[in-house]
Length: 239
Image 1 (cartoon, rainbow, N blue to C red):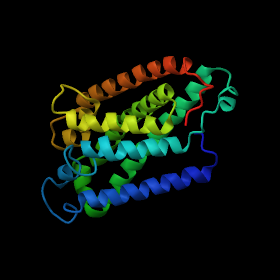
Image 2 (cartoon, rainbow, N blue to C red):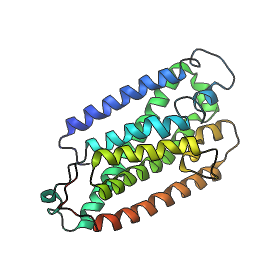
Image 3 (cartoon, rainbow, N blue to C red):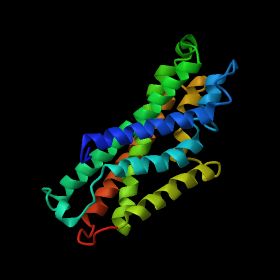
């Protein structure tokens, strides 16, 4: 990752986890002291709670874009030309985005496991395969945030504005939450692995199908981003 120093990454990651912990408590405060049979489903459903589609499309998307860009250097012409080629720079930038998506997804999983263990008996978590489901969900949201990060850079490369790039991307992704009932498929509709497995309506093949869709979208956006970046006017420094 391109953080100027390790302390910046550590501080940003700690702030991220603190916010996620606070958000987890706020989202699950009505469930953590209950003994309802399906409490894990309620806490991790796609329509409410810490892992809801609304949380991913709106709150986590904006948080991820800020977290990702915090570690990226400004793309001044003098910095870009230091690389062997535009492709070399694009690959390094893309790797940073993927690493940011990994750490962001990992933080969500860690917080969900640690705080769930505090309030829910370990035996129930084992019985419901909660740890395995969390791992499977992390793979899905890693792909999800990865293509969102690449998409933000595509928009930024076209309009030469970091601020507008974040705003436009946030509007696009958050709007999918409100459009999900009107279109046959949107990426946000795949964010329901917890619900699918906890309600026993999904199996591993459903998860693999989600991975294929999200990975295919990521590859397509990576290719498009490379084409656009190669045509980008580097001299026109973005604000």
